[in-house]
Image 1 (cartoon, helix red, strand yellow):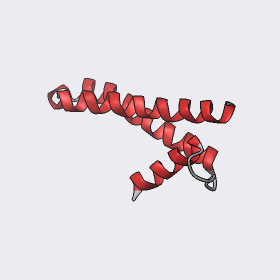
Image 2 (cartoon, one colour; image 1 turned 180 degrees about the horizontal axis):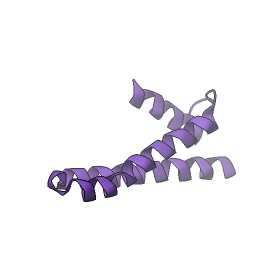
Image 3 (spheres, rainbow, N blue to C red; image 1 turned 45 degrees about the vertical axis):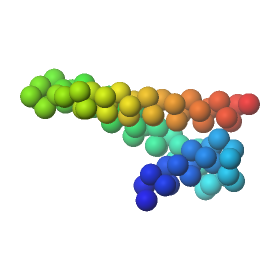
Image 4 (cartoon, rainbow, N blue to C red; image 1 turned 120 degrees about the horizontal axis):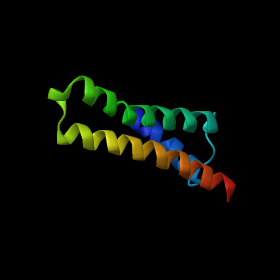
Length: 80
């Protein structure tokens, strides 16, 4: 359900579907959560080096890139 909601806000922000309620606030919150999750990989890798794996590093990078692109895409779509 959460992924569906995030996808709907991404599509709405891109102008594919109609504007959803609280779109700007929601996109900022989603972006921040993704960025924080991505950045959380760094201290957790330092604190728990035995838990570091290729998957955990890859997931952190993907979360960070997702948050960045979600925000940049929203800004680009609304400034065009």
